[in-house]
Image (cartoon, rainbow, N blue to C red; front, side, top):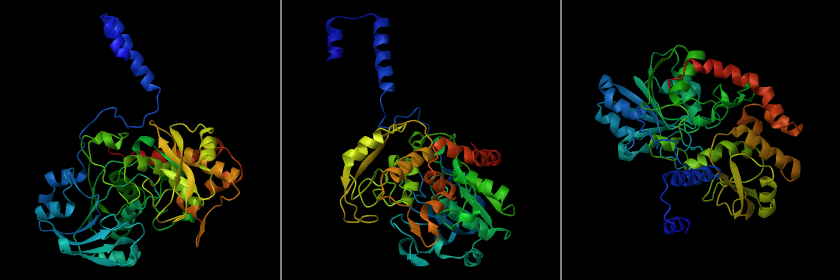
Length: 422
């Protein structure tokens, strides 16, 4: 109606029109973003696409093991199995990470191997092998090709899968080829505590880095090789037309959910905030249509929690009251009250948001407790340290806690800088 009114008044002044457009843009810029607008779009080519175009002929006739899953596709969804076979490379077997070769499993597979009959291949489940048995298995192929979409977080287990393979082939002369992919969280930078070896676990707390390491898989492999495993024949097939800090949707690549509970890029960004909340006894929306967007528990009043969390004024996020009933995982079959977490755009420190939310729960609800497993506190394994938990329990504000880990962040940032590709 406002535009129609302008037409009736026959406003033809060019300056007036520019002022009008500026006001619209200015006002829109102050509004929360919910649609992930891009700063610019640029067609990025993955390491797989560059390998298919330029490299397969070098390895024609070679026997290979592929460390892959359902995300190992090009922009036309052609799978790496078909690509390397067309290039004349012989596939001996597949090594699959957590969630299996098809990304359909919510938990680790209980079998050591399975038949992939459609492709006439055997799939070995990486997490079922010890260091020595994996080393023996990898004596069979001449080359190992790694191509999995990572998330840029230490506790996301795919980076540990890469480390397990590198550990197993160190000093063997086997060639490892890492086909690089974008880091969907690279725009968040380096954040979080460096892994404390006292809280090492083989899959969740394994890769020696800060919690958010701002490296692609290729860069992470270069860093681990350069700092810890120097005797590895490593080749990185880099991305082209990529620069660090890009949002994933700006790459024009399709979002292939890297695991079952990250169905969208929005859920993946929310995951950065909510993954540490798996250390307390609430549901994170697993078993709902909005995993890592909903969180709550059966006793929570959704409206009251929304009001209280909104009062915290968490930058870049908003909250909406919601009720949900998980079909699996925490509080399966029980009606939970909670909130729908909305990311509204811009950069943020995911560790800070996690810290603020968990601290609120711990200080304001006696029914919230730290979850434990056979190793100890779940949060310590996820964070790779007990410092995060102890800082919250001692009442420290986030800035005080961040000062405690600042040297860890700076030292890691300096070391990783020499291994960056983009």
